[in-house]
Image (cartoon, rainbow, N blue to C red; front, top):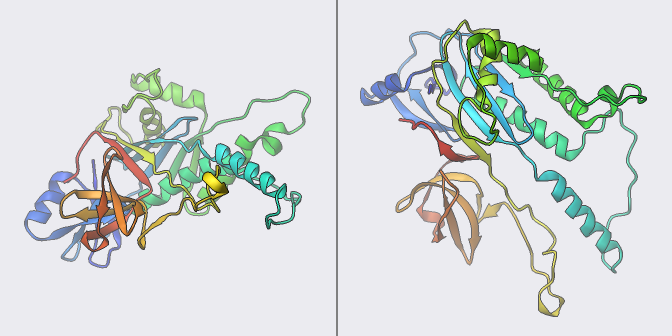
Length: 340
């Protein structure tokens, strides 16, 4: 797995191998640095070259899991399998239920608003899924200088008798088109049909796992690698099958109160994303628990969680004992390879 490289001014350079990064650090020519939760190095000298090759990120979107593969012409830099966001629809229904309930009580509430007439309305659950792809591209672009984006195109089911259903009414098509427009503003976009990916995979002699939840390169990343290789590379064999498995951190956003009241009709405050002034999900180093991330808080103390599996380590950490590294959006639930 490649290691991102920054110059003295933290400008992005071409990545290097783990072995080379380790040697640079041993010689004192570089130091470790966390760039949005991923380990990178900062050169302590002027780089020998500022030349940047073309780098492509392949995306295999799925209903439950997404596959990503970042490739240059000669190397596979990183492979990611990410769990899709699937909780937004339920949260929106819960919010609507609470709002309707407040309207039946003597409680201040905003007046009911009708949907404004817009050209293209993007449902929150659909936007969350495609925004997740944009966030991953933005995250990877801060580590590797990405120039091309390759996506396996998906289409909505055609409904007979309904004119232009796919393009104008299907949330899947609306979300996809919104995503493509945002990508094309900064990168060169390539799209491939599902049968194109299938033919590429067969021509290389690769197989794909039937169990979609299996944490393996040949579950989702193999398709992402194939379309990225079609755009940027000339490989016939995969040079890096290691996968970084990620799961989005789920925060309880602030609500007015709990859904169900306590005895006496009392409803306590619920949720929030700040723990004693520190944003939840912040990657930190603790003197006792080492590298972990910030969770909730209670009575002036902070809970810490394992960065690899999300399990809670303690609930009584002091803010002054935390060394803040960076904020993270995803949980590295399983890492098939270690960094430096």
